[in-house]
Length: 194
Image 1: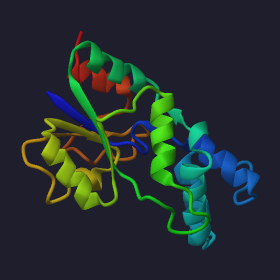
Image 2: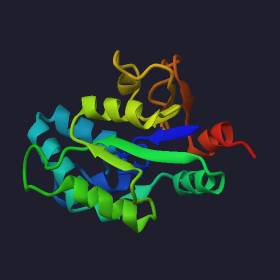
Image 3: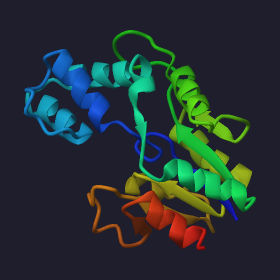
C-alpha cells in the first residue's frame, strides 16, 4: 500500500485563519460563519473576487503558520509510519499568489509541514494539476485522498488508484463513485484497521 494525500483542505484546515484574516481586514462582517467557504461566498456575492484571491495569497503565505491540521491527520501519518506504510503528500501548489503580495507559498507550506513533523522527501508540491496527476502515477500510489471530487474525477487520473474523498463538512453527498469519509479517524480505521 502506498498512500498519497493532498495538502490544502485535506491535511490543513483553514476555516479559522480565513475568518480571522477577513474580519481583521474588514472584508466580512464579524458574524460571518467561521468557515472558509462562508468567507469566500460572502466576498463573491459582493462582487469582490479579486479580494478573495488576494486573501488566499495572504492566508497561504503570511498566515500559514496559524493554520491547524485537521483532527486526526497527524495520528494517521503516525499510524502509517508505525506500520511501514508509505505516505506521500502530493499537492497542486503555485509558487506565488495570483494577486497581491508575492509570498512564497511553497516555502510557507514546507515550513508548516516541518513544524508538524511531515517534511521530507515524500512531499511533492506541484505547480500544476497535471503535474500532480503525473506524480501520483510516478510514485505508484495505490490510494489517494483529496477534498475535491472534481480532481478525483479527472479523466487523466491514474488508473487503478483507489480514490478517497475527504468531505468533513458533507459538501459532496452525491459523490458516490468515491470512498467518502468525514474524518481522518474514519479514513485511518478503513485503511489501517487495528
